[in-house]
Image (cartoon, rainbow, N blue to C red; front, side, top):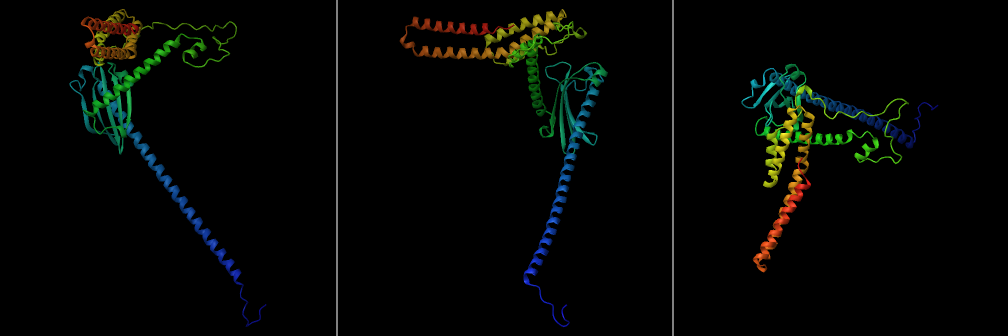
Length: 376
């Protein structure tokens, strides 16, 4: 013990320094922990705020879609509840730009007869909820059956445009441009469906798996594939042939896209030369007559086969043939220009003979192109 009245010895300075360092480290750890806790809480709150914003946006997005679909159903109910001749837009399209309140939001619409089609309607409805918008398009065929028209409308084509692509108004010329784009999409869909149907027609009768793989361009295993399934003895694996002419439904034609006027109009707008256009018109008349005859006899499958073959020719071969004919005409014109340049060194007889020969070669080439791609 230290005697009373005497002072305690002072600690060495290194020990004090260690104690100061320890106190500083402890305070630093406290600051770091508090900072980490603050950042964690801030991050969680930020994420929760972002999640809430996404939920709010998703909810508004769904509501705008529901509002647009509600508008479609209301308009279809109004259309189907009365005869086609009494439709309210019979004398002109109905471009309704005044918002109609619906489920906390609103919608506008445009409805009109589909250009070039009978008993068919183009319907546009844009639903809006808060800052989200949704534009729906439906091409509907009118059916004079109230219950079926309401429960199962005959939609021929439908499209959905999100708010960023939705216009602010549904009136000309905006609606005309949108309808043109929908027609392009519909034509592309029909063309793709036709190509798939053609592929199916080629595969439908090939019951041998190896033949199907070969037709699809796939590699057939070298060890081969059995042509028939393995079955217990006495169980037949023969495939019954599919019916070639299905019985028409309700005794009515299935040629939904058979429209002579549209085909005439298409042929006239493709820029075919006069001679080839006349050839196509004659082929069209021949096919139209055959289709009408088969339809009157209620041989709708045969009528569809004729129509399908003619459309395939127009879409896949006619334009290519016109390109070949144009190339031949340009080559003929170039040959005539060369002959004109040499006319001074030729006698009139030689000039006339060479010109006639060039023309004959040109005619023979045109005839060869057309004969190599005959219309059905």
